[in-house]
Length: 168
Image (cartoon, rainbow, N blue to C red; front, side, top):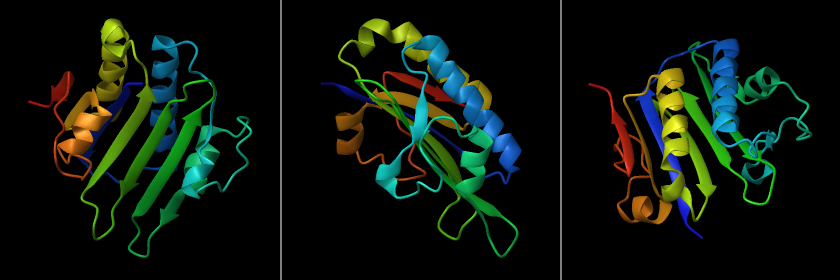
């Protein structure tokens, strides 16, 4: 089965938990509008960040707050992993932080879908929403295997795909 990856990256910005939660909520809503069967999200426990019960009833702000750490210098980091329910779950990963090794924030959506290229307008809709919500320097949708082979899973390396946005 084909596997797809939407990645967006931007310069780090230290935002409030409320603002991050608002952006996360808007992103998940955009996915649900384009793909109505992808609407229930839970904390992804495989990553070991399951601070809250993954029952789907926990407000997003609490999930973001529980995965946000305030650092000694006053900045904060967030590592939020969510997974949609259903046969072919989508994965959502948000990594924001002002640490010594992190100079940028990134959002990743990952899903499996054989017919993705036939439904390109729905994926373009999600990409446009991510660009509007997060205001990244770049965002792209690419085949996961090709992205891995190209070595683009490191931060700072723009990923080109079959749909790509670059801020001008």
